Image 1 (cartoon, rainbow over the protein chains, first blue to last red):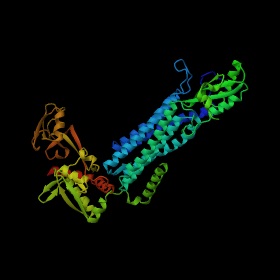
Image 2: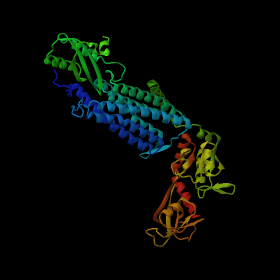
Image 3: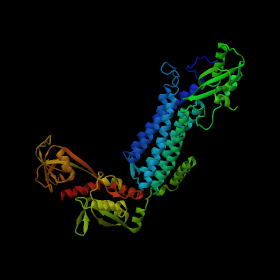
Image 4: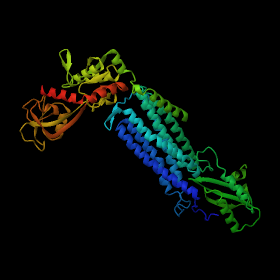
Length: 327
Length: 235
């Protein structure tokens, strides 16, 4: 049985804590990679307009991992007098920034693609010199884009399963940012190849597809964040399904001898769950020890439960929602 | 959508590999047209020493470079003279294949046409007659400069006593001129460099094969361009 008192930060299970450390490491890799990619793009493209866009992409791509790393410093701090519910919502704030970054990147890509399409611009790519060898600058650009895209692809893939295990919406949104980045780099590569084939509109058309895709992801995360802020009951990190933790807790509660009926309401605070358990006892008197033991038992149901209060009530008619849950 | 993106990338990569031999290409086939028709249409802006009308013909550093390029391509040159904005506007809509005549990288048309890398870089310096003392500072020093040029503005910023003239001539005393004219004017360079200009040729946008062909030509003709310029200076 885990030792804890009300509202105190829980001890994380060992494997969860390891995963969390791994996630933080991945975020550091991401920051370093994005910085390196920006530098390589700078070397290849110099101060061109394409360069400025690529830099803005990178800058936006840095927002989720940085927000993540900042939030990770607060996440499991103990509650104090100023923040009596703890610091778990630092994750919610990071989630907001990650979702916002995706929306902005999507808007930026779409806007830029439309502008390019309307201007009917026909960019040309000439020769470059690398270590004394003359070659088409397009090959260098493709190399630089591959350097950007390939690690992003693997970083994003590595993050998704961890995000699911950790119930980590920020990491999940950030994995989508990695996906957005490698897709955007692929669109740029299609653009370079298109220019090379004398098909200048390949660039904005590819960018438009990718931009729309990123914008869609961003809006989906922004909606997720809004619902999160509204105190939505627990859902999976991709928001597709509800998580049956309240039902599980109710089942566990009714297995306690003195509890006849139980209703649970939970909301997500960052990656963890806060909530109340309303229980109807089978008898008129319940001891302090019994309530405490039941609380500890319920905490052990799921590591994501960070703050749970048992309230003993005469019946469940006090609230239409509590009365009405369909089992 | 996810599938679309991947398919696009795969398609692009596959087609590059399949035809890497004819890559990059022109958006509207300039290089092919030049080779087929055996003719290059060259927009030319008259500007000493780069392109100068000489009777019914043209001479100058860039004129000579273009003649050699055409020779390499087995083509003849058809000159289309005009003002700088006429010539570059014609290049933008691809009415000519190439534009020359003292164009530099600082030209504001750079976003509408494509400039090659520089074939010659010139530096405007303050020169003094051979054997005279070289002033450490230009403050109050009388320096001759061609009227209405960028050099004149740059010279004024140094605090020199600027004397604008129509044309700098031998015996004018200290003068701000491009480096290749120093010998001709009997001047020695000082450390007072006013501005540097990268001289380029211009091609239409989107014509990658043509651009690459011209860039390759420029790359191996830098020494030739410099020599041509020095020869003009000696004349």
